[in-house]
Image (cartoon, rainbow over the protein chains, first blue to last red):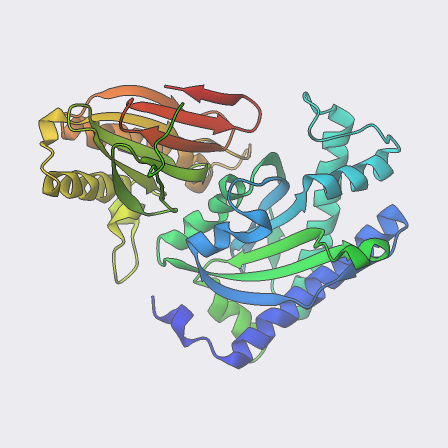
Length: 210
Length: 167
């Protein structure tokens, strides 16, 4: 392996900038979609163990709405957009104009699921196209999948590829929130970008850093 | 269930293994495509749990091998750990859970089928060691949290949509 351990603070800054640009574009898309002000937190780049990764967003057992896609092309990796149930409910209620919609009511209505799927498509698309413009790398995302389940069960799929070479993961973690409920100090939605270990060199090279 | 005051729940993380003795229980949370393998001795009331991520240690490209991560090396390491506690391999029985496919993709990429592949690899390794599978809850598309009680030899499985069951 080795590659991951050689990452310097300059590298971390680059990864933070990627999280920053990606999430800023996604926040703008979401804001236009919902006609609401959406803001973002300062991106975090973390090198953590798998178990620490599972402790995000309230822990492995917390039920969340998760959008997942694989990135292919010049860079490979996994990307997640994770929403707590309450927040996903608010977004979808607003999108489909149905205040009764709830991800906890089974079976979950088809229209709500497809709205969530579409929201995932749009947000991950704007995140990744910003990333592609910034790095000038070709990035081909797969069609995002949707799951309403335990956070640990969802995020672990992104650790599989990494686990062949490492017991640690570098996660580019950006969170967004609705401006008018900012005072509650709740993080409302998380983007996790987990590049495959081999892809870090490509990312750094694309920005002129070896 | 009435539990003694000294009852502890031993937590096992992803790609980890540990053992438990009565009256304690052992638990792992948020299994998706991973498989939780419980090996137990009903007479001695000792059990072990390994939280497996990948089917085969041949997939490893790391310099150091975390044996608990793979089906083949993880089960072997768990058997050895139980042997150290005086449990004989021929007394061991298994209960397994997990191996879901959390997202439905059309992609043929092997990573997407990792859940079923993990289950196949676990079964192969158990068969190799002549350890019978007494019960299993594998596959599907739901995450699972599991807890094994070596006193009752029951595996408690919680999912988001189907509630709680014991096998």
